[in-house]
Length: 240
Image (cartoon, rainbow, N blue to C red; front, side):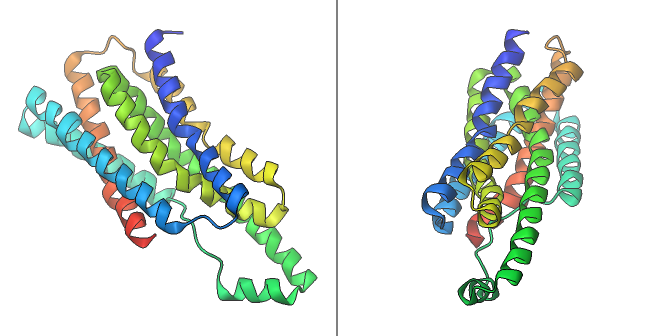
């Protein structure tokens, strides 16, 4: 396998497997601090915006000109907007008062039905996160083609962003199954989509791309990162 692809897989794995860290929060404490998750999201959002505007988009505008650079940028925005429309970002929701009341009453029939519903929601969340992570893995790989610094910064920002996603998967699974291993396993598996996205995009975009096309694609990655930050990461940081 090409060394560039190996680098992309390694960097995206850092981001992908940070869902395991989110699962550990659930396993070790059972009540993750939303404030801490919000701080991580806010930090990752700032890092992501700086990469998008000061590096990827800036270089695309300088290399391709104002018009073409913006066309590539907003193509990335529209692409990820469509992804977000059909695969919304899962969020961590604290238990409601009704859920707490049911738990206190100890009604076995109600609790069993509730656990089944929560387990289904956890599995659906894991599938949604996996699909959501494909373009993130692609972004890390394309960023690493620009340079190790860009790829590493993107991987770090996405890793911080993915920790709450691991919590969003592990929390309902742990509640439903009472199994730490099942919660950890499903949250970790949902992160596999990122390195898988690298392999797919490596087949679509060879490393010998025309420099102008590469700059345009990286400009689109900047659009993806900007949309992800402003549409999902910052609002979640404020909410948490």
